[in-house]
View 1 (cartoon, chains in turn blue, yellow):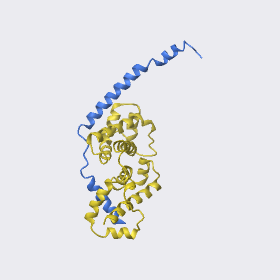
View 2 (cartoon, chains in turn red, yellow):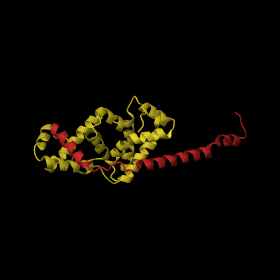
View 3 (cartoon, one colour):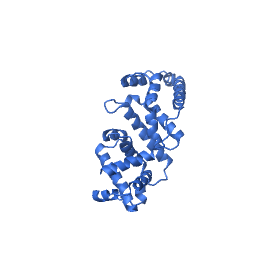
View 4 (tube, chains in turn brown, yellow):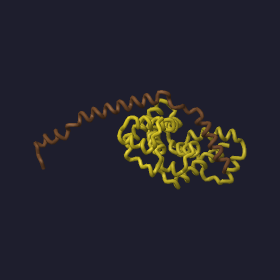
Length: 64
Length: 185
């Protein structure tokens, strides 16, 4: 069975020989995405921050 | 790359610190990207999936358990799922070759040995083609084991398939591939 595994390994090695490398701008693109995500999180916090108060108000100040 | 330990790195990511996130990407991007790019030929798609993997990791870092797997293996687990989902969406029209062609998995080990005794070069070329025709999950498991050299326990964690079932599956896939060669020759 040794042959079988060796052949499979060889076939996979050849199949993946031309797999592209990590693009040079990967890190920069990732940083951008993190930046956008950070902005969105901040915006959503800004927009949703007062929600509990509004809900509280909409209940007419119910304290139950 | 900094000399942060893995524990400190995880802690930094848990606290949402940018330098922790950047460090994690710096350490593991190559590996994660390569794993995805072997299955997803378009570089832009592979890049986006690799980024999705890290974004998912950052938002789910609390669910990471260092006792179960290394950070790298955990990232591979996320990448595996995202890649499979992507391929499923991308190629919904592809029917598993099992449903359309004859795959012989019931051949004996002796028959297999006989099939292996001659024409190695041709056999390897045929195998390369047959691997392409495997269902995505089987091809990925085969790659994780034979190309990336992950131990079965790690592949079990990555794929969520029990190690014993995985060993059987690998054996079946091997027989399927060689059975196909036998049918064709």
